[in-house]
Amino acid sequence: MKHLKMNKTVEVYKEPADIAKQQEQHYHLLSQLQSLVKDLSSSCQQRLSYDTLSNLALALIDGTVFEIVQGLLEIQHLTEKNLYNQRLKLHSEHRALKQELLKKHKEALQSCKTHNMAVLRAAQQRELEALEQRVKDEQRMMDEKIVLELDQKVIDQQNTLEKAGVPGFYITTNPQELTLQMNLLELILKMQQKVCESGSC
Image (cartoon, rainbow, N blue to C red; front, side, top):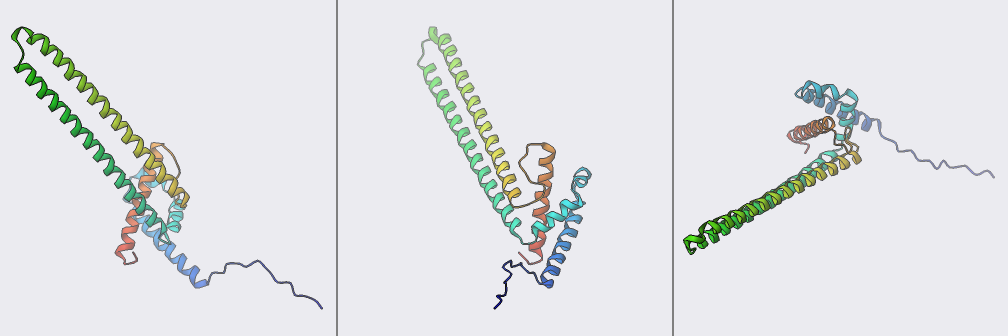
């Protein structure tokens, strides 16, 4: 007796209706993207080819990219707020230190004998200059830390969007590529707004 051989390879079959719906969504998103691109500078328009926009439209169909971008923006806003608060805290600590030093100097001058006044003023001037240098150094270090943290956030965003299959995203520090990526992000956010306005959000 012959045994029938079963075909074990199961293909994922999409209904023609599903394919037609996806193509319709793709076409709709692509035409909206093409319309939005017209608002960008001519140099950016030239860099956003039909293929890039078509691939972006495909990536946007299921809405996952919108959620990813939203999550990344929330993280970025929290990071910026946190860094701003750190800088503000440092600034107020510096102001308090300077006020305290000036108060101490004023009290010392009031109880100082006239013949020691010049020596005391010179010492106080040196002390004030040393504090101002310390403030300057600490502020510079804080600003460098802020720049590094924000740069790291950009890398994280590029990496996440590249892994999500969003065209045009990969880790780079090239200013032209960064401008293009910012324009792509702007397009995604505008598309999300349009999707929400149409009630599909």
